Image (cartoon, rainbow, N blue to C red; front, side):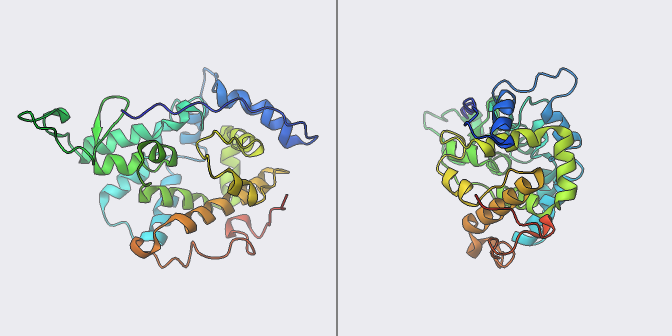
Length: 279
């Protein structure tokens, strides 16, 4: 069974006399407790009109896929583009233990539609254990295989927990953010309230977080937290670099020209030429 992701430890004010440090402490409660607004939680707002808007985000994922792997002719890919982040609905946070588990909803949908179930519910047949190496079991008890894992493993955290490589959907999902202009992404993320959580985590990186081992690189790109636009530009630089570094260009069908462009000297087009300051 997929283990439940651990919650983020409490973010604390690091003593710096600047808005980012104070913001990290103020937003820590969102990460730990989750949003308790009974009217609409941050995950629901993200799906309805925020960064993961159900009628906008999938198109950017599709565009990113096209750039990386060619046009997505398989209709199952389009289903995945539209359902992979819908699990944020009702979540009280984006990167806490509840938010991390959002991938399971889309994985369950893809598994029900396209994977079926293992023979004998995965139990031994005639006393002989089955080869279930390609299957995963969600916390709901549902088995998923190829297409369920395609959604499940778009999460780097889940891929690390299961000891498997991320799926191609992970690369397209990360590059999708890079393709959005700041003036289109930020108003939605601000309105949903999720940008506060994202900036809080960037202000106080935690070596025990889901990105353990990547903290140094995350900081080394010089995130500027002086404004939301500066944060967005630094974040998209990091996403672009991560995709360029980790994607298997030789086997992906991508020429590598798009993701492999220098991001240090040339800020992403999504920033409109805005170059984030280095620390």
